[in-house]
Length: 137
Image 1 (cartoon, rainbow, N blue to C red):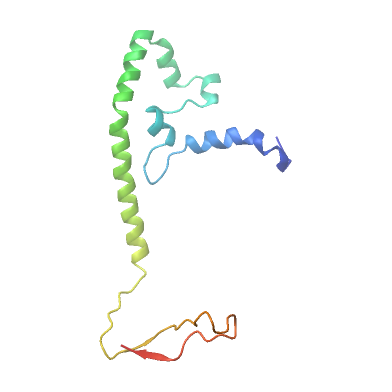
Image 2 (tube, one colour):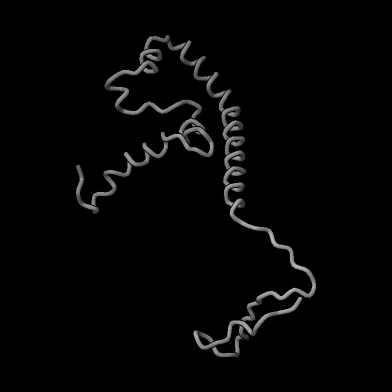
């Protein structure tokens, strides 16, 4: 284990692997999947073979190439699905954000507070005026 902050470059590859193979909430996919069209194989799966590794090891080269080409042809579809998920996620976030705000309608003759900024020739800093009372629309 690296304890010094000067050896950050030795941890960088592990951090990038974790980042690229983690499912994002907004698109419901990993960045690796969207770029390469297949899920990443982490180093632990090579040592202790998972079902994905066992299946790929038993496939002949021709079949593996065909399967890989199928995955690559479906990559555009996966990206479109990710874009749809991202748009839905953005809508949900916007609704949650806008739920806290109250729309206000102002009419002619109502008093509102208006901030009048000083001119550049005037004094600046904490002694400069920032408003001059209520403003009538």
